Amino acid sequence: MLSSEPMTVPTVSGQPLGDEVDVRARPAAGWALLRSEISVLFRRKRTWAMLVALAAVPILIALAVRLTESNPRSNGGSGPAFLDEITHNGLFVAALGLTVCIPLFLPLTVGVVAGDTIAGEASAGTLRYLLIAPAGRLRLLVVKYIGAAVFSLAATLTVAAAGALIGAALFPIGPVTLLSGNTIGVGESLVRSLLIASFITISLLGLSAIGLFFSTLTDVPVGAMAATIVVSVVSQVLDNLPQLDWLHPWLFSNYWLSFGDLLRDPISWTSFGENALLQGAYFIIFGALAFGRFSTKDVLS
Amino acid sequence: MSDGASLAIETHGLTKRFGQHDAVKGVDLAVPHGAVFGFLGPNGSGKTTTIRLLLGLANPTSGEAVVLGGAMPRESATVLPRVGALVEGPGFYPYLSGSDNLHRLDTADRYATGASRKRRVAAALDRVGLSAASAKKVKAYSLGMKQRLGIANALLTPRELLVLDEPTNGLDPQGTREVRSLVRELAAEGTTVFVSSHLLAEIEQICTHAAIMSAGALVAQGTLDELRGSGRGAVILKTPDAALADSVLSRLGLTVQSTPVASGAMAELTADLIGATTEASDIVAALVEAGVRVNGFTVEQTSLEDRFVDLTGAGFNVEQ
Ligand SMILES: Nc1ncnc2c1ncn2[C@@H]1O[C@H](COP(=O)(O)OP(=O)(O)OP(=O)(O)O)[C@@H](O)[C@H]1O
Ligand SMILES: [Mg+2]
Image: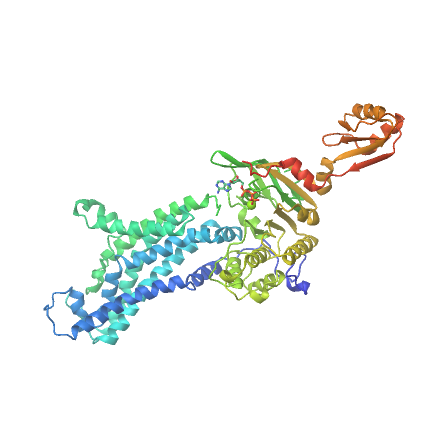
């Protein structure tokens, strides 16, 4: 196991130059860890399995609609509005896919990634090695959170892109009639799809922060994942109880389905802004809780 | 912290409590710069917990730890880049290859330059004999290969201090030998090595200093000679003047066991040196001065193992 060439390893006594750990030197900003985090995230089979599953949702819907459409219609268009729309215009498949995924599938996958952030490293035994490298506890949390946010973006874009592609393949493409009655061209409708995707990504940021916090509480990643997913379901259930009207504006899932405003002309940014503010508040509260917990936590895994 | 400059690790009253149980209690370690320091103790005696405290992974309940001149865990950011460590076995991402794992952990160190990362990873892998398996996923590694990768991780950048928690765990005899020569080599380069183990023979072979833990407390520390010496074993005296010798030895404060023999015949007296302040040479002088005829005089050195068992008890059960 010893090298026959003694000079292959940089040594304290000075070989080769430029490799010394000089802690008086300014440390690098630390982007390398973020790059590594994202690349490791996307090299996991699990990540790809989740993205493929998400992509399958709009594809399956579009196929189902396409296949039933070729039969003589028996139910005179009593299906959901979107389902009818997509047969006229494939561009609606992206929005439909996102609408179907936001209550359960997206929170499920984001819960898995966010719940895994710290607890997953702890259970793999890598957390202690990251910390003694030293990654720095705050920096590690920030990197982990950004990783979860990047996954949220990737997940939403995956649904939108899969929807747009399968829509274009199976249905006619043309100008889109907005909720406000105006019509926009194909290019403009793609821009609107991206806006919806970013609205939904932002909608998931609060949940990601909650998942990050749960992940600092345990060394068992499945526990943190399950807790995050349960919280997202509970929030939506509460959001549907009219008795709890007063509570609704404070629930992180309150705006999850409010992206309809982006399908008007001119665009109404009110819910976009309110949603961003709400998610920001969740990020600050649960980010602070996560840091409060993690900065002094005994890492015994 | 009077001579903090010459100590690589220094702790004062370091204590860690888990619930009702003190895993580490009042430990005062002093590890000189450049030493190869063996950290001994039976299972559950608090070695790994102490190492976690030294590395800032856990916060002490009381007491303080100073590593390379910086208080832990407060100064982790400037201390830890100079420390390489293996704590409680290796920990890696099973779905990444050996070299990708090292890349990943190296990016966490902001002082490790990205430009040399590839070369340093390859060199560290080479140093532990894993070059051929570097592209293999860690989930396909054997226990010993993971352990070697863990050691490679500790060697990614030049370190002033290496903390190795049972580095030879799971290694084959070749691997064990290579770790020994690796430690010697690093020590020759000036690295301080703090190595925990319960393999006494190993510690005796590579260490200059050692400390012994028992049930969370530090029961001895010093150079290996001091450790063996403070146990000092016993003197065995062969003499025909048993009665006279007995009185001389007793006067020196030694407890004497003698095999009773007929007067005039050769007697063998054994005096325990443990806890005694008298040097063996002074004993001979006193005997001769008193006119004791000495036929044989042997000083029986304790081995580190005897000393270890003396200090930590011979019982097999884990103490709490
Ligand atoms: N996370 C924990 N929670 C509670 N008690 C713990 C924890 N980790 C360790 N201990 C206790 O602390 C004591 C010391 O454990 P430690 O792991 O430091 O022993 P060790 O000397 O490293 O043993 P070994 O030789 O088996 O590795 C033990 O009694 C153990 O039960
Ligand atoms: Mg241990």
